[in-house]
Length: 158
Ligand SMILES: CC(C)(COP(=O)(O)OP(=O)(O)OC[C@H]1O[C@@H](n2cnc3c(N)ncnc32)[C@H](O)[C@@H]1OP(=O)(O)O)[C@@H](O)C(=O)NCCC(=O)NCCS
Image (tube, rainbow, N blue to C red):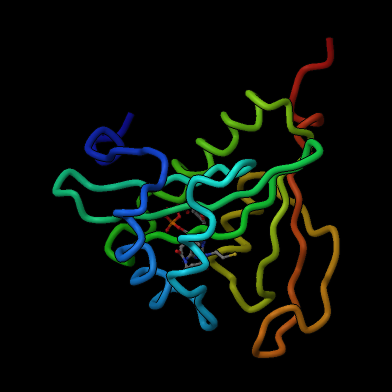
């Protein structure tokens, strides 16, 4: 484990995280979710919501997922600019992958802007594939690409 990963703490999102989550959201997305939207996700059933905090307690990143019927939907993932390109999103997705094993999920999917090269590159490096496109999905009119990771393909068959 890297020195950075050792200094980070990962845990479920709590209401006390929401101010920092909403702040990071504001600087990370062209059309950010409002704080109330994150608040309505915390503590709900069929959710997997994690934050990662640095040794000094500052928020390093978050992931918000919903799951049903063998599928996990990544609603949001973001990393604080100072922590980017240091493996934090990778750590968060590793958590999602470990969770997918626990619930025997078959697929993890998400929407991403075609213009979001860092995120698309990140997902492709993890093995996600483009599986579709949603026309004018975002509030500003940009389409979304749908990317999926098919978990059966990664598990040894018994
Ligand atoms: C996308 C995002 C979550 C990546 O977080 P991160 O912690 O910097 O990612 P990691 O350090 O774990 O990167 C893992 C791999 O993803 C790819 N990657 C990440 N950022 C990249 C960038 N800016 N350009 C190209 N590839 C990138 C690389 O393959 C990288 O591996 P490498 O550093 O060994 O080359 C982060 O840039 C972010 O918060 N962006 C704003 C919010 C956002 O767009 N979220 C996704 C919405 S769908």
